[in-house]
Image (cartoon, rainbow, N blue to C red; front, side, top):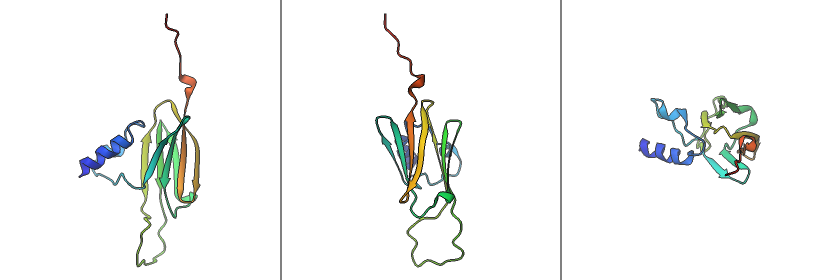
Length: 130
């Protein structure tokens, strides 16, 4: 079961690289939070579903070609739930970006964290074939 989850995650992230969490001994839940990766003409967009989260609870950092999305929610102060359908567990999602990818814009709107990743064409070189 864990191997199937890792295989699905590999296929979903093949263009980004690998997630270092796959190689840790404790297999963390790599499906939370849910996300989409959308390819466009100028690059990619990562959409992360974070309903009920605010900007102060989220952190997006790029360092050494790693895009890290962290969420840490404060305890609700002892509230007891009859049903809790919205997760409040902390997460740390890491994507390894290729050298030609740069994070453009990060925004949070209506429970959807959107990260725009642009292709940097400045390193591209075209050669004339002789």
